[in-house]
Image (tube, rainbow, N blue to C red):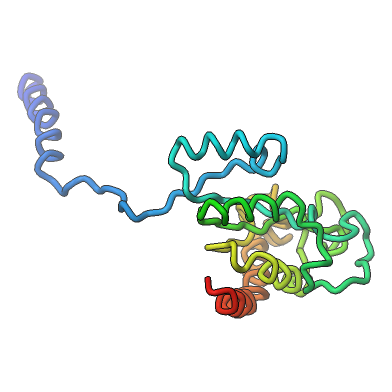
Length: 212
């Protein structure tokens, strides 16, 4: 094919692409009912910066928050290799601190909350008891912890999620077995299965009793 003809065909193709886009499917738009969650844990969980952060979010029209709850920050004796003796399903056994304050404020403002319960976990809940305390968290310990979480925040949380990026080595280990097969997926599934049905049941019960 002669070069002038090739050049003509290329020009024609380039001109036709915008036209095809204009006559194609309509642009996909987000639903007006879709909820967008804002995450700003550093400022929102700090009592000294929370009021200013909340005021800024109000001006931006924010009405939903994503909060990451780190298991080790609220658990008793989080750096001990030996599990302490405590009633793990009792919310009173934990130090909810700024989490309780933030979720109470969100409820007062009628803001939805997506609570992501994630690592690091207490040292005693890991399989190797070594930092950074994200290796094979014990499903039974996690189930008991999630029971306490649901009992504490059942009327204040709209949605629950477990683990922040479980497919990333900064949050869950090991990612792979020695033979190269995936390990984190199975670990995550175990954690999910350990708490999902119990969490749903407890949350439903709390919401029913509180009228939420």
